[in-house]
Amino acid sequence: MPHRVVRLRNGIRLLHIPTNSPISHFGILVDAGTRDEPLSRPGLAHFVEHTIFKGTTKRSSVRVINRIENVGGDLNASTSKEETDFYASFLSPFYPRTIELLADIFFNATFPEKELKKEKTVVFEEINFYNDSPSELIFDDFESLIFQNHDMGKSILGSKESVSKITRSDIKNFISSNYTLENIILCSVGNITHTQLVSLCEKHFGSIVISEGKRERKPFLNYSPQTKEIVKSTSQTNVLTGVPAYDIHNSKRIPFLLLTNILGGQGQNTRLNMSIREKKGLAYTIESYFNAFSDCGLFSVYFGCDSHERNHCLELVYREIEKLKKNKLGTMQLFYAKKQFIGQLALARESKLNELLSSGHLALFYNEIADMQENMQSVEKITAEELQEVANEIFNLSNFSTLIYNPEE
Image 1: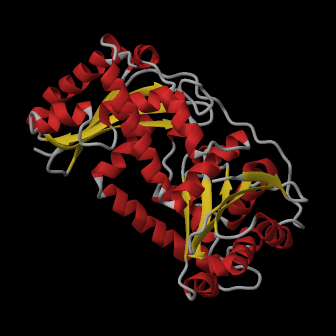
Image 2 (image 1 turned 120 degrees about the vertical axis):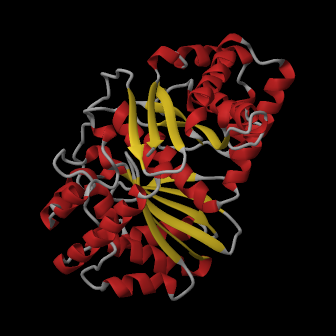
């Protein structure tokens, strides 16, 4: 579908992807996340995401929620290492209501002290939930291991101690420092004309004066491989192993995404799943991941298994990785790997909310996005030589870090 990125009169970028669906989506994406917090306030970006909905200069928190949900919509938000997203899904005729509400939340949030105190308790319970979910928690702990002594290594949720210290002043300072003009993009995927959308956004966003201050991020430079074992009250051993990889701007990112998918992506026919689950029956879940950030990236493999099979599973993982380094994919292997990956990309875009978030994130960095046809062409151009090259460039096993959650004996 055609898409456009334009600027409102005050400089805010607006991305629109038109659809014919009765359901539309609108969001405000911000290039600011956990890595942008003060060192003394881990969890601040996530706490802002929680509390920005807790009342504005003209609405209570209850009225904020009801404004969308009373007409069948859904209001949500998320925080990552580098981004904070605020978005809504709604019936298309309610575009005016949704845009007005999100503008009110974004620019007029009051962060009442009573609500801050209450929401800290909510976040404490979220922290408890993750602490009770080793298959979730291990990813945060692994990033802390990889990005030691760097902002990228901070937990998104923070700790109960750090969250308890967050003040209204901390919130205001974080927003003023990070929610700046070039760090914000408005995103729309829905059934509205470009002219109508621009008019609504100009009305509710275009007259707001936003700081143009430039924020500097400390680059991640000093990686050293680590191995760490932690005892947890679990039934199985949880393992994450991996290594730093390409950033979002690197031209080798797309070939490496394909390689990661071949190794342990979504399908049941991945090399890791076939080797460890289907042939050996050693694990229920085994997957590989590649996350590309603005100036760094992270490749990892996760699995859970019986404690006695831990080393065996790790050996099998590394064996499959070595095969990708030594053996170039055959013509038919590459053909079907591409078709599978393209199909998965197309299925993911069937969710228009996913399309809003993925396209918006790319637009934050590039000021433009690639449509599905361009994505397909990029994947089709990948050669077996390129895949082998990125495998040998990233998959240096002596450079891997490993985090293991061992069950109590």
